[in-house]
Image 1 (cartoon, helix red, strand yellow):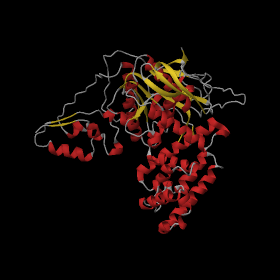
Image 2 (image 1 turned 90 degrees about the horizontal axis):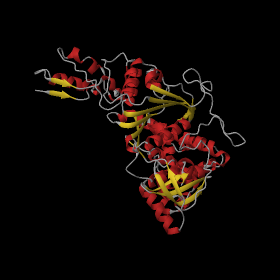
Image 3 (image 1 turned 90 degrees about the vertical axis):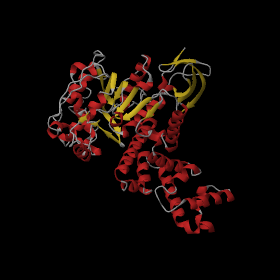
Length: 523
């Protein structure tokens, strides 16, 4: 007799027909929805359901709920100014009695490394102002953008959680590829060997693997040694072919590892193992996994740029192990949240950092050819902005490493649509160094032969790219961290030109952090 529908802007055609049929007899229908937050077209939702509601249900009364109880007015006015550029909307203007609040901060960064430096600096400042990490969130358009920021958060000792996704180095495809790397680096690594021996499928099942393990125990050989000599064991006679082929594959890849740059080695692993072909045949999910692997390539490129000729496979695996181990050691309740904008819908945070606001990223490349798709991207940006209650920081980068390639993107058109009176624009470099939105940005300045750097912006709490800690620490030293407060150094271990510190903080317990990224002060 009475029908109430929530989130009506997200309904699809079938749901629309169902509501129409069920309400025909009595006509008692109430729907609630926000056409400016219709962001699920890829799931089948159609915004036309809410835009044409009064036409479909004659006599319907429209009530506009325009008071916002979450955000301050500058944030709402930024969102209002953006979304009014959409033609396909019913029209409303949000207002708040929370006061004007702070203006939206916009940072135009040289590259994605500087972008993460800005974000970490803002996190430090907001924590110092009493905003806990759990009240802060980093939002991005696609999951592949999280890798760089995750790496820097771990280095800085800042705990985080991924909502609606998996931490970068915990994703199956990343663990698979890294397992190949580990076995190439150390053929005796039997944990990783078990992971990849039949990944992708190559006719080596669990029974065969168990037999290999049994023979290894009986003969005192490693599993890889048994596999290399599979044709000499009667118990493996039926599977000797696939095993020997796998052994040859790993031998060839190990040989390449000594000769190729790491990003090229990754390509060889993907092609020779058949992993790329397997993912290409796995539809949309496979495409997403391929994009994540391309982002792993970005990590490889960055690592080799930082380490130069000293950067090799063993060093990269050690660095990755350090990040993941530190992440596990620094588990705590107070964590900053990382998520895509889609996953953030319905949530709110005191401080929000919206990164990667560039053409081909946000709006996405696929949306640039269609006005309808572009309007959905604008609605998505509107959702992102309105997640912030008190503080909103937006960033873009002139140059970024994404999917294993250096990209030079123009700043997002959405940035120009934000009202100037609601945005504090922070220029980290003279505008004539590069011009976002009008031309390609100048390349990132690399370190000079003298060891100095040009064009590097140093932000509080973040070490410039490639720079190590110049401070020395000893057991018993009292230090202070911007977020964690005061603590005592329990252990200091030299690692890759930097120092891994184990510190017992007075208020938050023991943490392990890299000295260069912690920016500690001795007390």
